[in-house]
Figure 1: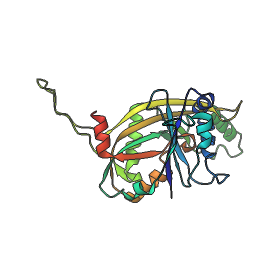
Figure 2: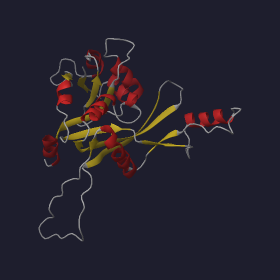
Figure 3: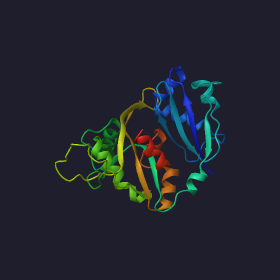
Figure 4: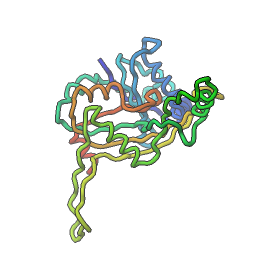
Length: 265
């Protein structure tokens, strides 16, 4: 069984501000909500900033969690709207059927693998130097390096290229008729029903004095059509892309009707 939680945080509290500034600290705080330690189950999470002066963590866990520590230290203890919501994820998984459409949101770390980065990070530079000092360095190439996609076009292409393997396609967006008196210069071809609603670059360290971690992230919103229910369930439960421990990869679904209403509101 799996559980999807929504945990409200108060960004004006010191602990909340500290957690929200570091995916490494926030990941540890999320894992602290599980009773079985050390945590061996798959945990996915992401931060939502849809409401001013408020942040929310969405967390997907295999066991039922307790978020009281986050409420007490970083939330609104005792306040209306300050109680975390925890829902059984099974009903959603059972509603996934071939051909059904859903609205979706995904925050991910779109990357590509290259033989050698043009601007290596500290960790990548250390790997290259270590490889160069190996006795067999001339005979063996170093394993590939993950390099972030930087542009919105690259990030959209990254998602579209992976959709099918994760059990869905992104249909074409519907086109609204032109306004009265406005004529198009030529035929208008609809693109895929997905857009990037936010992009960010996260920079943080795991430990004081340690190397800096840099993640390029993109949040996608759109509409998907199920092509392989089992593969999509796996994607929902295990995530899409790398950096899952840093709040990336959690795919969430909503009824397509609700997504359409929100888009035209």
